[in-house]
Length: 124
Image (cartoon, rainbow, N blue to C red; front, side):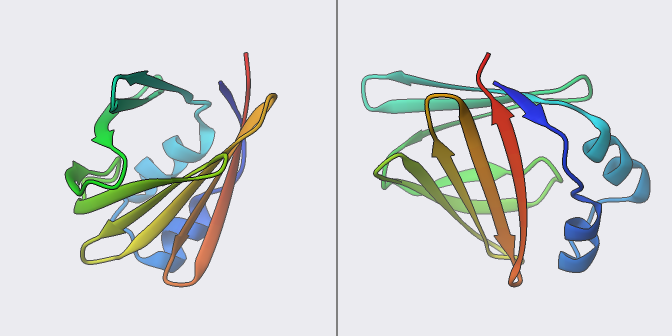
């Protein structure tokens, strides 16, 4: 899936995520691709951009350690609710990531400190 660009700058600033100005600008300008694979009960979610590739492996409902793209260390749990993967991240800045899948796109909604950011990924 490819991303439809949207601004994450205000989201990052308002939520006090520790991302420097250069990283904010790079993150806002890239068009990452995402891939979700399932092997038995284990899922692999990979985000790839020109600057960084990040993968997480998880089983639904089981807590796992994660280092976020901005370098935070969190404990995450991902559950499946219909066509949505709901990820709860626990750490200094608790956050929620909802990934809603349709036939044509992935809508990713990030919420932290009551502030939301939405990214749209088009299926390719």
